[in-house]
Length: 314
Ligand SMILES: Nc1ncnc2c1ncn2[C@@H]1O[C@H](COP(=O)(O)OP(=O)(O)O)[C@@H](O)[C@H]1O
Ligand SMILES: [Mg+2]
Image (cartoon, rainbow, N blue to C red; front, top):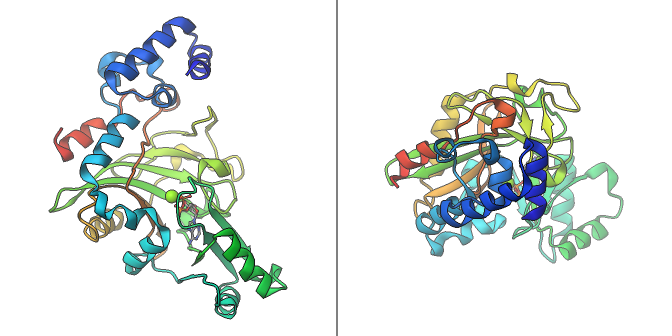
């Protein structure tokens, strides 16, 4: 907490002890996590502006309340997720087991490149990429995946040219946080993530994000949780504020469809990719987490909590 208070006081020119007191008070009485306080520049916001922000403690409460414990495992295990949501993946996938080296070889040679995943609990690090051309011992390759627990193997998603224009080397996902009320899905917030050429667009791979408005327009420059701000994509030079997610009508319809598959899990952070032929599903996160607007980057001083309140009714 002191490290974060130090960052904040340096960044915004605030007296450090006052920041410490404010952070503790906000955590204790306003359900604001220390990371929320830093990431969303609470040090420069007034009480009314702060009240418009979704925060991690509040999001966690929503997950506990609206994501039925008996169904969370479908989202927790990526193999099970692919099984249950298979018709929404729009790609081939297979599961590595002790005896299927030749099946793995055929799959990988047909695809050329594959993405492998450790099915459970890797917090953004359990995704890998391999090229068939670089494999010479297929039995060893298979044994390696099996031993390391990279059991889920997927075809590489082909993203829409508007996404490839920003970062072609990574499949750039859109995080759509949504609530299904039993009748329809409400989109609560959308964040566009961008990678840096690695297999994954997650922050652990150097990725960053920008929030999108209801029509898919970027609110401003990109940022991450490590105080990096990107006016332009560092590799392609694409101006992040100029990004617009294509096919928003299809995205809304798609989120409404996938939200009905497991209606017992109502509050979900969906990772989707818009492709040339429409959106496809990467995964759903029952612990949706929070993606919010960063005022010091966008100049916009409000967050998405009113949309959550309206849809969920709290
Ligand atoms: N089949 C795929 N093809 C291409 N890229 C993928 C594929 N699956 C995942 N990715 C990339 O890896 C990232 C992380 O994958 P994901 O399944 O969401 O795991 P986690 O978020 O738990 O690390 C995605 O956001 C995307 O950038
Ligand atoms: Mg993900």
